Amino acid sequence: MAVYRPTYRDATTGERKQSDTWWYDFNYVGRRIRESAKTTRKTIAVEAEKKRRRELERAYAGIPSEKPEERIRTISELLASYRKGYAVNHRDKAALRVKSGSAHVDRILGALLLPDLTQERIIGYMADRQTEGASNRTINIELGVLSRAIGLPWRALWPKVRKLEENSDVGRALEPEEERLLLEAAAGNKRSPLIYPFLVTLAWTGMRSDEARLLQWLQVDFEAGEVRVGKSKTEAGAKRVIPMSSVLRAALEHHAGWYAGKLGLIRPEHYVFPFMDRTRPVDAKRPVTSLKKAWHSARTAAGVDCRLHDLRHSFCTKLGEAGVPERTMLDIMGHVSAAMLKRYSHIRAKARREAIEAVESRQFSIGVPKVSPKVGDSAADLTDTKLLN
Image (tube, rainbow, N blue to C red):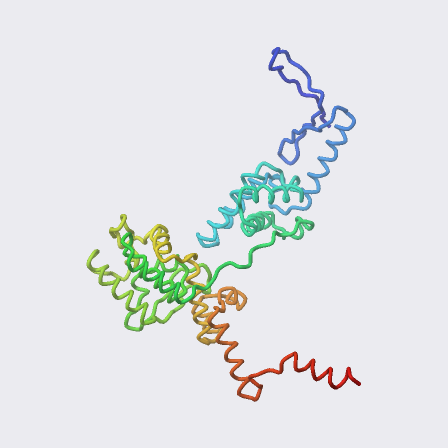
C-alpha cells in the first residue's frame, strides 16, 4: 500500500508545501496507477486505494485478452487496437466508417481506463455530443463502435443506458415534377458537364452515389442495354446488373460522344465520370472526386429541397408503384432484406389518391349508393317512430 501527500511549489512565495489531500500510487499489471484519493484523511485514502485495486482486479478478470499486461488499457489504446484489426478483413470504406465513428469517442473518453467507463460517463458523452450538434443516430453509431471494440454488447456494458431515439424519416421519394425540374436544371448547368448524366444514372438505376462515381465504361454495355455495378457498400449490391431505360441510354450515349471529343478514344478501364479540373476533364484513368458544388447548384436552380441519396429512394419507389415483384426489386437495388427495401420504397401522394379512387370505384360498381342518407333524415325517423310512442 502506498498513500502519500504530494508536495508542490507555491506559485506566490516559491516555497515547497505539502498538499492536504492524500493520493495513492501503485503498479498493476505493468501500469502505474497514481490518482487522488480525494480525501484529507489517511485512513479513507487507504480504503480508496483498496477499492481502486478491487476495481482493476474485476476488470482484469472480466476482459478477455491474449496478454495480461494489455488487459488494463485506456479507451484510446483499445480503439486503436480495434481499428487496426478491423481494417485487416473489412473493406476500406467500412474501416473508414469505424475510424470516423471512433474519433469523437477517442477525443472525449480516450484518456479513461476501461474500468472507469461507467454508465454515468456514457450518459455524459451523449450529452456532450448533443451539445456539439451531433444527431442521435451518429451518437448511437459512435457508442456502438466503442462497445464492439470492448467486445461486449451495449446491453451488457451499460444496461441502464437506452440508445437515443433516432429519426426514422431518413429520406423521401421525389415527386415526378420535382425530378423533372432537377434534371432540367442539371442539363442546363454551366459548371459541370458531368452533373446531368450523373443524376440521370442515379435516378434510373438506384445506384448509390459512389457506385455511380466509380463506374467504368466496361460496366456500361450499350449492346445488351445494361449497367453492371462494380464495388458496392454491401455484398448483395456488388456486380448486380441493371437494365438501361431509354432515358438513361440517351443520356449516357450523349455523354460518351462528349467524352470522346474531350479525351479521345474511350477505353474500357476509363471512368465514366472522369477527374475534372474545374469544368474540363483531364484524366480518364481517375474518377471525379466530388460533384457537390454542381449538385448544390442544380438543386438550387430547380428549387427542390432534397438529398442526392433521395434519387435512390425515388427509383425504388418507381419500381414499387409499377408493381415490380419484391424479389426483383431486391436484386436491382442490391438490398439484403425486405426491411431495408421498405425503408427505401415510399408511396407518393398521387399513388395514395389513385388507390382510394380505385376502391371507391369498386364500391360503387357493386351497388353502394352514391348518395348517402342524411343524418337529419335518420333523426326524423327516430322521432316519428320511437319518441312519440
